Amino acid sequence: MAGEIFLSMMAAAALTFVGSRWIDRLYDGCSELSFPEKISERAKFRRPLMFVALTIFFAAADDLWLAAGIFLLVLMTATDFEQYMLFDETTGALALIGAARIFSAGLNFVDCAAASLIGGGIFLLLAVLTGALGGGDVKLVAALGLWLGCEKLLSVVLMATIGGGLAALMMIALKQKDRGSYFAYGPYFALAAIYVLLTR
Image 1: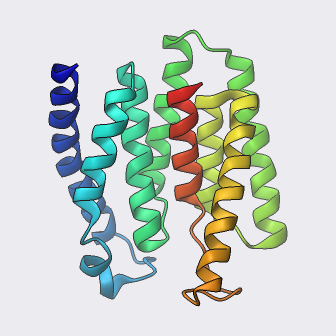
Image 2: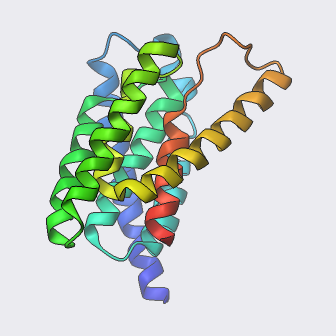
């Protein structure tokens, strides 16, 4: 047990460094950041929070595919909280690893492909009709479908919608945001997905 925790901490430390450097490089090449003048300020707790999260999640992950997916989801949580950005590079990597995992783990290809197409399609429609979701959220849901399949993706969507909605209401009540403010839903999808992947 102690050995597993130590290995999780070592892996978390290494990937926190690598992941944070990757995020910084993504920011350097992006002209669409929401807070370009506050990159350092909004990222000041990134590394310690990433280290703690990755240590906990890696200790619970039972294969390398899952650990890789969790790593990417933690990065996406960080960038969406910091700059309201979900980068194609991280979402694309999540989708590719999810597709490879389908065959490696013997998952139901039809179920996972359907979850990706239907989930992504529904969220694309919602984004077009309501304007409340960004393209990054749509791509994230489509990528998560490859990991989760239809039933688990539905659970993630429900948890993320409830969790994100409650967080938004709390921020409005505390006057940190108003009803017209942009709200980052990506982290709630990512964290709900990690929970489902680790427990079901």
